[in-house]
Amino acid sequence: MTNELDTLATALYVRIDDALKAQPHLAPWRPKVGLAPTLSDAELVTLAVLSALLGFTSERRWLRHARTELAGMFPYLPGQSGYNRRLRNACDLVVHMIRMLAADTSLWSDDVWVADSTPVECGRSRDTARRSDLAGWAQYGYCASHSRYFWGLRLHLLCTLGGLPVLFALSGAKADEREVLVGMLQAAPDVLAAHPQQTIIADR
Image 1: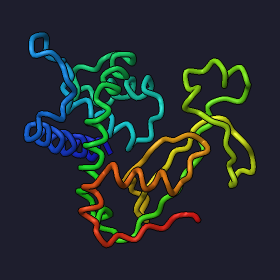
Image 2 (image 1 turned 90 degrees about the vertical axis):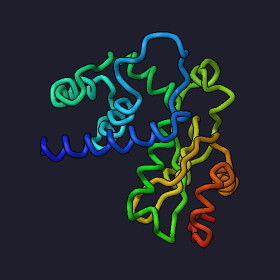
Image 3 (image 1 turned 90 degrees about the horizontal axis):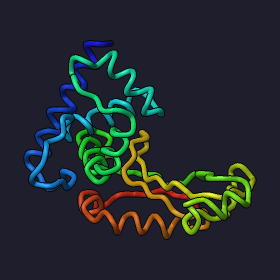
């Protein structure tokens, strides 16, 4: 298992590093004068992908695991707050790399995709709805699959039949799924151009 993980981590790093060298504009902005980060952008994205593949949902636990199991490959790892800050600053890069890695798989060529959404509950009390920084974004909406109202957002996914995410978006709880789907496709014209005859299955 360790050898397989090392091989996967190496392959991911090389693929991401090559892409960054070919398209340096993808890297997060930083001043031209100053100290270079000890953890490179390629290493950062590789760590993020590995944490998702291994099922870690806690950054603190993931970094503790990486320090124990991946110290040979990643001699320097930042603290949890620094890691989180770097990841947030590299959001566009991570999204681009996820799509690039997805396009490397055979699932990317599936001619049928499915679209659906799931509620992301952000709070239950009125005080939370008033005081939360999500006020103005989160809304009250109805979840038919759970037969209940909730306050929060909706996560919209466009996936292959094998479960590979193609596009995603967050919206208010009352947003129309079809309108959000159209917006997702309009925001990624390159994805549509690569799949001109794609069939998309969604709820009515």
